[in-house]
Image (cartoon, rainbow, N blue to C red; front, side):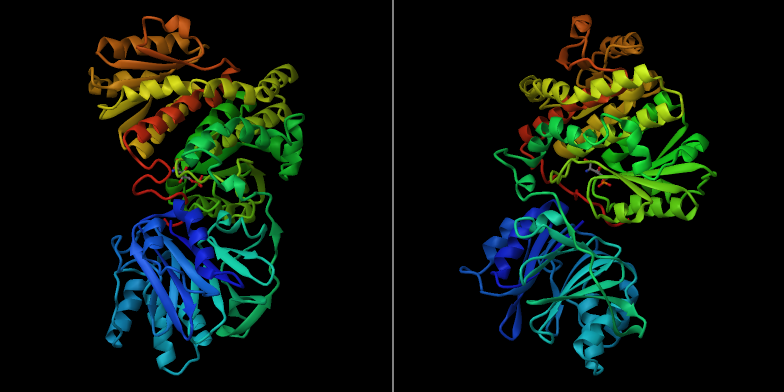
Length: 614
Ligand code: M6R
């Protein structure tokens, strides 16, 4: 959902802003723009398209500005176009915005009645127009800005600059993520940390209702709605600065052509990083998350809410926790959870799963659960993100920055965290005997090796992807804990290759979807050896009998000889851990199908990495 950046300091602001925008382009790529201090005026360049298109319209050499704002857009209000590109400006005031101004229509009508003329179809433009309106009534710029912001309803992260406050840039947060980076006499702000990792590791995560007033030598943090009354004066506060462990290289492609491919191949490492702290003694993770033995013994139910790929991880978690700890688990899509009449009984644990920690629906679900009295735990990849700050406790995945819009390494890190949690809960509840817990943790310790073996199927998967060029639709089947893997495989294919795909529990096929099958329909079947092998084999026979081409992902290729048209071999592991190895070929299949179709797999159409609006 849109990325915003801002800079003030001694460097070439335009260079810093454009570099920062490139690292945020995964948040949206419909249009891009910059605003910068240009003598006594504000220079603005913006265009429909990507950061490369913006770079192409910038003056060469770039103007030597020392302060500015930038934006990369995922369109919400108003089509992708030059006129709807940010920054939006009027009367010497420029604004970039991530979020949605819910009352913009009402504000716009009022402003139009007062004689304001609008140049775009966006919700954002009401902000500079409002500020300028208050200035026309005689208010100084900063007071007008505060007054205008307090009238906005909805979610917003804003970058603001003005000819009326030279030498300053302003960062404002309410509901949309915003971090401020601290350098030597210079400051950066951005929707996400990777934007400025090459310049600083010190960041302050803004809270709702805060404004940073940044000048070359000073960063002042205030609450907009201060004790002095709304918009009346500063209520200063001291920013909490945290040092981030990520490096700039982690957010680079490091020789790969695509972030997605790099991230797929990083999984042996990122899964181990996620587990490292707990692997020798998973029980330690419970008190570290504030989960006491009393809570565990009294635990009646786990509620998990998440979106997209994180939702599929939640489903894997359900099978793992119910199987190993015998605790009932309800998994909900976060956007549904928030609008339900939630029945959270006493002694429930609520878990949100989110890579970014900024997904609006997941945050809303977490807040709702907290309001209903549940203890909230978030499984999250971004230190300092909103989910991690608001939850009662955090279990961090250590996947490092995930830049590819299609989530891969975050998924396996999430299921690693969930499997360890399931083991810990199982042992603490006395439902998982020590021997079994040890077998599982021993397999988890071997997981990097198993993932390397699964990744070795890359060339074979690429060959298979090349045979799918005329596929218009595909089915993904799985059973038990691998049903969510079928869902995830189908989601990856849809996102990256734009080929329609459905994930289905294999046994449910005959209740409807089997009608879709003919010889043009490739069917991917996840079929690990285990208690459901024979049943899934019958499902393969059923779809084969209707002419489908079957691609099987299995650790038992010999038994599928003559049954499946193609087999992709993965290593064997404990049944609860089979999703780790089975998802790898499905990620690669989607990747290659996307690349072979000429798609930009890192930035698939219509998508944005973090969905920070409802
Ligand atoms: O950051 P989150 O994990 O909360 O994001 C959730 C989904 O938006 C995300 O997984 C999305 O579905 C990805 N595009 C999947 O590849």
